[in-house]
Amino acid sequence: MDLNLDTLKREILGYLDEGGFAVFRSSPGTIDGVSGSMIWDAEEHPDYQEFLQVASKVGVKLIVFASREFEATDLDELSEQLDSADLPRDEDREYRSRIRDLRIYQGVTCSIELAFDFDQRLYIYELRPDWFDEFLELDEEIIARVSDDEMDDDTLGGYFSKN
Image (tube, rainbow, N blue to C red):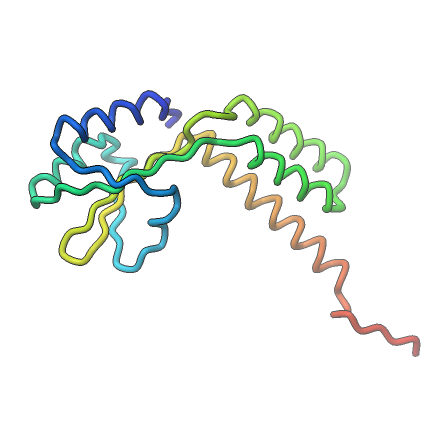
């Protein structure tokens, strides 16, 4: 789903304030992969209010909040990776076109994370728009292609015999 997370971010912060929650502002991504964490099913239940109602019902008053803006450097790094890859011209052009198309999202909020701790578990709610998921997929594709190219260049493992 393509959401306007900038508007939603303001709405969530207002809801947290009105609900009497204390907000701990965190850096985005710091709660990723925390052992024992539980991820909210935002696909089937995208309403952040449902998530926060759960926190309220179990008596939690501290909510971790993080958001991330999409930056030009995110795309610049992808372009640099392409510069170091030896891809066929058509593939290179297609990747660069996809990167160019994503530039319209510079400065836009690309992820919102909410979390709370209860009974030694971290409960996490995360939203990302479809275009950011496309960016992440593109990033993975390019990294895989660059890695494949590097492995192809080093098929002899650094050993060369003149025999």
